Length: 451
Image 1 (cartoon, rainbow, N blue to C red):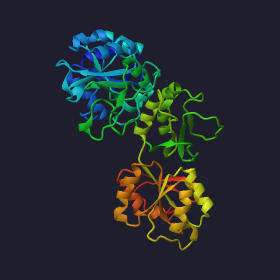
Image 2: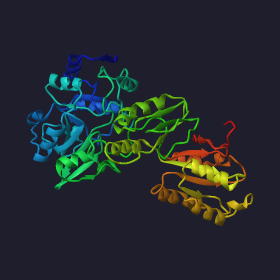
Image 3: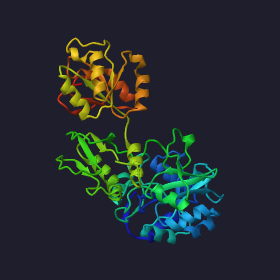
Image 4: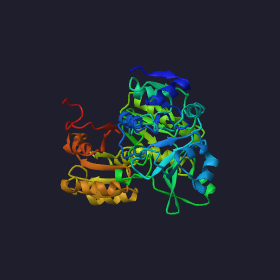
């Protein structure tokens, strides 16, 4: 199949009327659109994206006047928000009518509705006599596209047309809200800050933006893992180390830094600029000759930064560092822990003492770590390690396993790293010279040896 790149709305409308799926621009991200009233056409979206049928879609309409034809009468609170924020990046959950196919809402009793602001998308909605179901134009779980080129990289040859509306002006998905039992719920933070919605409603929004299983899904975009690049992304650094094998993403910085794969989302510190550039930076990082991505944490959760934090948290991996102390001085070892912002050290050595360096004996080391503000756990029993890790992963972000002593790279021979990788964790080895090495299971060999 040839994929045509065009700005001609009429051609896109013609294909949609024939039951095809086409890519369309919105002010937030590009979407894969189909006739929302045609369940056969909608199913093609799920197949193209490999999207679980339990994840509902957003239905795009021209505006509040289009609701009557769908058999939907908005309550007063929803009508007020529509008149204030539509067209724009706000999605509202409302009770569905029989006109909306169940596949669109994943069998749920409410439908997610939005009136986009992008001029090409608005022209397209005027050109077709039906609403458009349109999730983001990416394979399920991957980074959302904000240019036509991003869409082509995903779906070249798989869809007939990409309607090219240029780079998305907002660059981050819509805010999703609804009402449950008289309470207003924030299902997904997005381009419209929750503070603006709370002011309009006169009520606080209660968050319900996570879903631990498909049965807990209430709205689009609630899966815990989402928006992920192909490379492992480690989010939450105060200041990511400038690792040679990493792409580095900073929200802003006042320092003059030198790194070949450094992305600064907003030199001025503007969250709007950072949101506009975020997905483009992730796409670019995926193309760079690096092995993983390190992303600075969002400075606060106010305004649009709440949505930035949400997307990066969902895009990130669960990671474990390993480290062996070899013959380090305590000062050098502590410098490594601080460089990689280690919050808790899990000691998995079988003996609570060091035959090489007395200052790495358990009692002395635990006291020194406490003084440095780093938590300490000792778990010499391999059968109990998973329980220990599950507990510390729930409370800490940067966790290091102290797994060997004496031989600088001994950790890399441990099958434990392979096992942790197979459990879905990303393992990075802190090397004695002060750099990160991504573990690629199965390795089970020291560095420098061939498999």
